[in-house]
Amino acid sequence: MTHGMIARTPGGPEVLVWSGLPDRAPGPGEALVRHTAIGVNFIDIYYRSGLYPWPETPLVPGAEAAGVIEALGPGVTDLSPGQAVAYVIPTGAYRQTRVVPADRLVPLPAGISGETAAAAMLKGLTAQYLVTACYKVAPGDTILVHAAAGGVGLILGQWLRALGATAIGTAGGPDKVALARAHGYAHVIDYTVGEFAPQVMEVTGGRGCDAVFDSVGASTWRGSLSVLRRRGSFVNFGQSSGMIAGFALSDLAKGSLIAMRPVLFDYIAERSELLERAADLFARIGAGQVVLDTVARVPLREVAGLHADMEARRTVGAAVLTT
Image 1 (tube, rainbow, N blue to C red):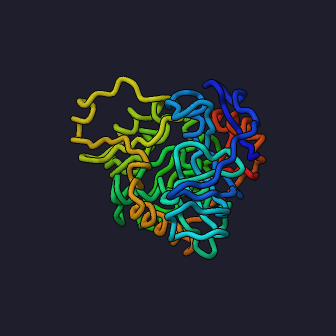
Image 2 (image 1 turned 90 degrees about the horizontal axis):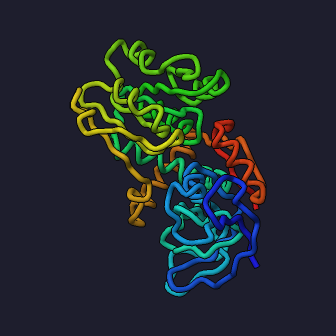
C-alpha cells in the first residue's frame, strides 16, 4: 500500500495526517509514477483550508511532483517505464506513488533533476505564462512583482532580467530584500518599513510600471493599480494575504488599465501547450538564466509544519518534499 498526507476536513495544517492510500494499476491513457520529489505551493494551502473547493474527500493536496514511471496503461505510446517525468495537476501529489493521466506528464530533459522539476513545474510554468501570455514582456519594460522572495518571485526576477526588463520587487525584511536583489531585481522595496506605492513611483520617475504581477491580493491590489502607467496591466495570480474585495471595473478607468486573474491550468490545458511552455522553462534553466533555489527539503510526513511556516511568511524560495 502506498502512503500520503490527507485531509478529511478543511482547516489548518493540523488536519494533514499520514495515511495509507489504495493502490491501483494504470488504466487506458494513464501511467503509474513513483514520486522522488514533490513541490509545495500556496495553492496547496488554499485547497487544504477550504478556500478552494475540494475535488474529492478526503483530499490529498499537492500540485506538482517529479518521479519515475513504473508502469503504463494501454494506449500510452510516447512514454516508457523507467523514464523520469514531472507534472502539475491542482491536487493529489502528496503521496509516494500515483496514477496520473499520461498526457499530463512532461519528460525531463538531460540535466534537469527530479528535485529541480518538482520545484519548477508550477512556479516556473506560472512565471513562463505570466511573461509570455498575460503581459508579453519586452526589453525596456518596467515590471513590479510582489512577494519577490517567494518561489514564483525569485524565478520572475531572473526571467525578467533575461528578457531585458527592469524588475522591481517587494519583500518583507532585509534578508528577503537581499535575496530578491540577488535574483535579478534592480530595485527591491521592503514593505515592512513603508508603503510600496510611493517608492515605486519614485523609482520610476513618476512614470509607473508597465505591468504588476501580484500574488498577494487583498493587501496590495489598490497600490498595484496606483503604480501602473496609462494602459498598464494588473495581473493578479494569487491571494496570499486574502482574496481581493471591493474591486470595481471603474477602478480601471483612471488610466484605462487592464486587469486579469489568470490560472495556470488554462494555459497548459492542451498537451502541446504544456510541452511548449515546459520546454521554454527547462531551456531557461539549462542555460542558467533561471536558477531554482531549493531552500527546504522536508520529509513528506512533516509537510504540516512547512504549511505553517509558509502561511506565516517565514519561508523564501522553493521547498520540496522527499518521499
